[in-house]
Length: 465
Image (cartoon, rainbow, N blue to C red; front, side, top):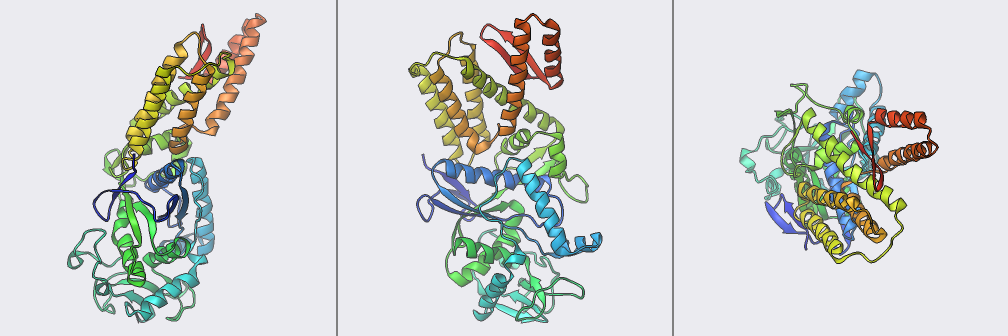
């Protein structure tokens, strides 16, 4: 099997070959930290973490970079509203971002560079563009001459003459051409600023990622990712800025995830239907949120509704119940023989199915189908009166391999599992001592936790309601 990635640049699936075998340079555009992140931000957070995790599972060392835009018009406006400073706003919402990241079961990136910590780097990058004649200064602002880069539009596949401009600032008569975009913005009275060769100001949006990505990962990335909305103008402008200087591709593979809809409507501020991740986490378990995000192929639109989330909750319960029952049975089994050939073949079949789907452009919905093949096999194994330790261990090892990528079952569930097992053991001791009152109390306590217990010939089993 070879990993195939749908490359936005080529518009087809390309075989993934990193520049250096076993090492992957991966950059994903992160949030502008002026507020709490919403459900739309969470999709690339979860999906590209899965990409990083899968690349690691198949043997790669991934240098994974997610940036923070911590100075911007939106941060300036928020600071004015709160009566505070831009750095204080940024610090507050970066901390909130990390809380959501942890709450979604996402490990930290290798690097999280901040714009304000790389200002000299960004200014130097703009100066290089100016020295090459592709940037010019007017009234303290610095613009990029798009006509100097003939391939402008190649990523988004748009014709330069047909594109709509005025991104981040309105179309300005000081521009040589309406298509030119800003690299450096002169500070307005009272705004945060940095000194530069062009006066006091701050960088434009697009130049930040070009400078930080090049500084950490070099001239060419293996993978550059982000939401579909970043394809133009943000990523298109990154390509122009970087490639005109280096003469090399900014990224060999471009990946973009689709939008999220709320109850089949476009998520927008005007409709007021945005959902913050911090609120989502209060209502649903992280495993269910991850399941929801991964149950649709990343390039397709994803619809959110309460019914869909309820289905996600039920689905992760099925997975958790199977895992918990397997672990419980493993604690009691004594027979340890060779794995039967039919079981070994089934384990290999499920493993191959999982990897085949993940290597087909990270097809997480079908990879989840392989997980449920595992659940069905686990439940059949648990029905047997006599089970083999080697079979249980091999089955659990396969699950851990898949879960290391998808993380639909987490350590928090393990902690809950331990608490439930402790109560079940206490109930067993109460029944042995014929303390029926205590036994019933524990059953009721478990019921209040949403746990149903079943006494079977193979021992006590439990599941969520």
